Image (cartoon, rainbow, N blue to C red; front, side, top):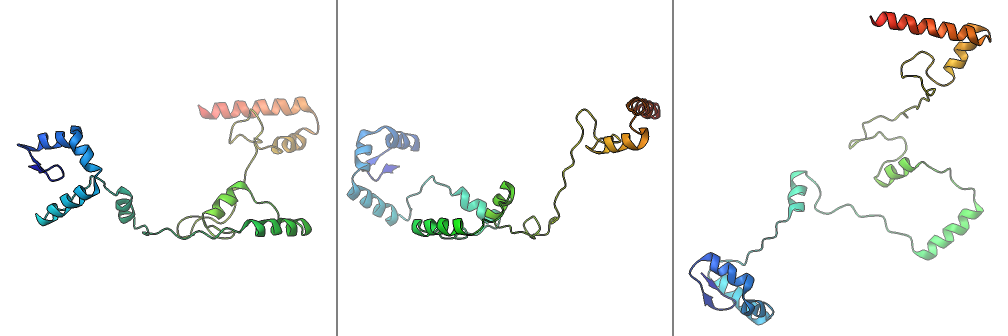
Length: 180
């Protein structure tokens, strides 16, 4: 056991590690490039390479998940002068319809209109329709969607609100009795 940088011998490895961490002489020798080069040559002569505690975990993840070693190059950005010219031409021509925030984020990740979602573009292509429900009405209740209750009330009651309320109570009672 010895420190090739300081040229000192030690009885065991813990005393060598303590020297590397606490010794002022070792710290000053680490600043001298000539001593570092000489210690490295001596280590190579013995058949040992200076080792580092660094472990490239990102490289390990790329290998494990079959990722490319180099990411895809980004599109070059327009220079500022071209950006100003684009603003002038945009004022003259009618603007494009604005896209939603989600579509913009997907476009930045490589998705384009008409493609399916997912890694192989095999996912759904149709939009997910939103349905608005009347406040206070549970999901799945008849007439729960906005517009349905008003249409049903007009069909069933002929504009008599008390008749609609009584029919709604009767239907609620029937559903309660069916539950057991």
